[in-house]
Length: 218
Image (cartoon, rainbow, N blue to C red; front, side):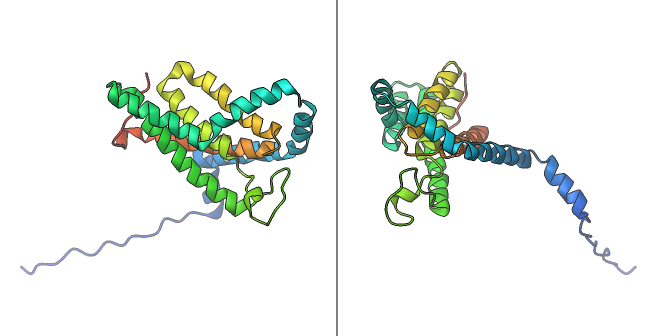
């Protein structure tokens, strides 16, 4: 008997109508999240001018002092020192959760920072008191680096230490609002930065089981 090879299978492409494809996109959680984020940022854009006037009306020596103390906490140097200290103490004191929190916090800071810097130079939005060459240091307002970084780190640390989650978010919000008070950013800048930090850190936390360092929140 002669051997007959099996007939090759024919793969037909899945036919999806434009309406069906649109329905699939609308049902996607990612699309819903993106739509919600755009809605929030769009709303904040409408409040930029009122927020600037409100911040200017509240200027006083006491708030100046508070904002002056909070503002350095949101800088990249401070946050990296905090994460590095946690990682070092966790290693020295054999506190794995503390060490893992420091490592993952630093990773969230760096990844969110890359996204933030890319958007800064793609958008090129002038700061509230911009003066200088186009796309120079005064044309990198959107999104806020302080808000992006501090919310990324706060999200990681809040996942590892749930009792500190809301105090950390309150501190992050105060630091971000301080940037509006100092006329360094618009309200929409800090809202976008906070969302970027939250999303990046949350994605890293969801993937932590497949990473070399896994954070197990208590």
